[in-house]
Length: 276
Image 1 (cartoon, rainbow, N blue to C red):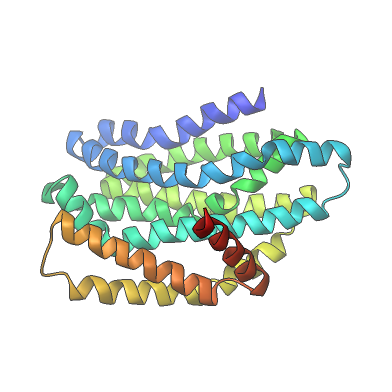
Image 2 (cartoon, one colour):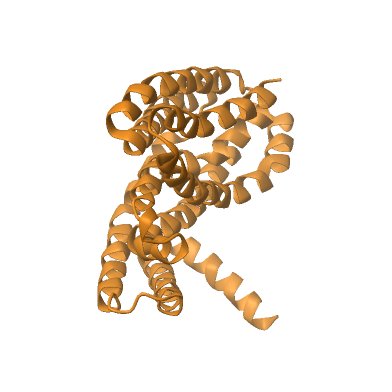
């Protein structure tokens, strides 16, 4: 029941902005926000590919011994780190190349969709990297608190978004959404995960903060790359820049974002792939 209710709340949370803008701001802002929403939806879907694979394993582990959280926390930190690598690549890549992408894809008239997509994408970094915790809740059948809390957040988000849309149009509703995402997931749900579910949230934040400097290095290198090729705005140039940035990102994260054990595991995986 709570899983079903959670899906309804999720749809309500992400679709109310367009309804509010249609009533308050007009069709242009609905189209502008819809363009941004397509990008945000794809961004959300990439992270969910990983954590769903581990739900059967988690269920088996928790059924075997619901009090033994050592293995669960090991997986939580490991998968959260992998999810961060993916989420940060997409977010920083869009931050650097998003304006040109939207100009080529939707046209200059929709150029403001760049910032409208970037704001909720920033607010989603924490919840997307903690998607594995949702699998833990499902495996332990403890979804009630999160569902009720999300329902309350969705109602408050809807209430605050109306005056925000009347004053700042699409920018207002997206800022409200990002703030509720950050407060709800980075604060309230993290306290719940730590106090009630006993997930290693301190370890999660320790891992995340260690990746902050490598991420900044990637962003700086990406903007330098983009500025060097900014004279040529075309699909071919954009794809070449994105491919070059992905190579830089993977290299920097491998050198500075992984520990010795992770480097060894990646080398073994690469050796297996090259042999095949």
